Image 1 (cartoon, helix red, strand yellow):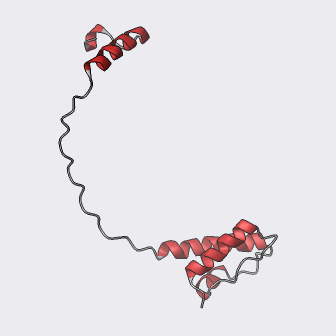
Image 2 (cartoon, one colour):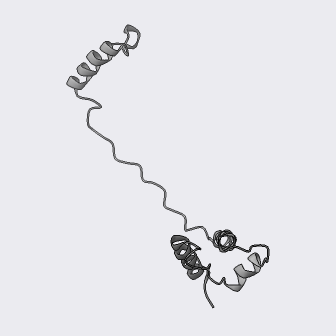
Image 3 (cartoon, helix red, strand yellow):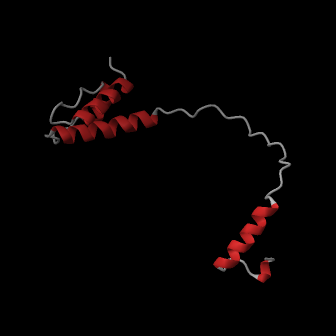
Length: 106
């Protein structure tokens, strides 16, 4: 019996090649029951129905992973926030662009 993951890989291969070159793969019984329909006459319609059903089955089977450990608090940073030359350069640049005013300390 073909697994859902094997069927998904076959769908991806068919999607890459196109339904003009390859017919959609035979679905496992679980998915075949979902898409058993004679109204879809073209290969592309059957392919879309298979992809939708397979996606639903795959998502329904997803189990949440284990809980992650809490993030550790980083060590303190002893560096200065900004070197004095950069502060002076920013003040000159921002005045030229009208970004700095006397009210915010520039």
